[in-house]
Image 1 (cartoon, helix red, strand yellow):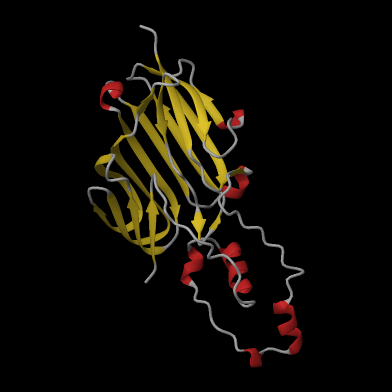
Image 2 (cartoon, rainbow, N blue to C red):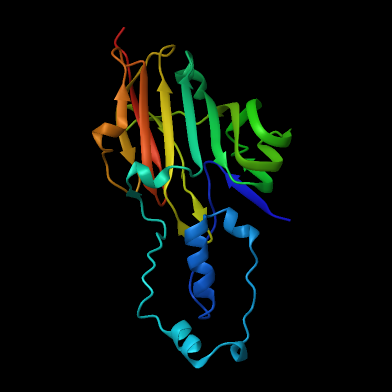
Length: 260
């Protein structure tokens, strides 16, 4: 049985499972890079006996000189959007509510797109800050169960999509900078200990609130996104961020209070 867990707003995985402990593992590693991060799990690694190999084949397997595989180990890197096409993508609409500065709450609508065929997936949220989870729409998913802090999917077909709505209590005031902050992430597309390109779109909807977008901060990465990846409507009530990246992305959006 193949299963997958997608954890939102937290990640605790550690280790270095991508290290090569055997020459035959290199073939499996190369296959993963070629066929994708989730679909690769459907294929078992079949053992090959040394006596089945010719001397030339053994020498080739043990030779690292022509092996040039670069695996991102978590550092944030922006990539060409073309590298994310056809892969898992995430879209978030973050609506800053009218009374957000009192409740610290936002409403989010989150769409997971282009999921791989897999038997079961759990989309897990932070139970301390997330409430009112609800599924708005889905395609190519046989069964969906909504819990207090997670949404469990089963019999997911290739190209499946699901959109989830909820309330997140994550807006905080920074007295030092005198701004309101909305931290997000870490976001990542990960297989074993390697990180691969993905597209994340986050849209801030500020129309109902008394807050205005001020600045984007990126933790452990470039401080400013390329301008072509940021869009803002004429009156500043909607701000769109398109991130094409690999590694771990942790954006924080900063807001100031509008003048009366």
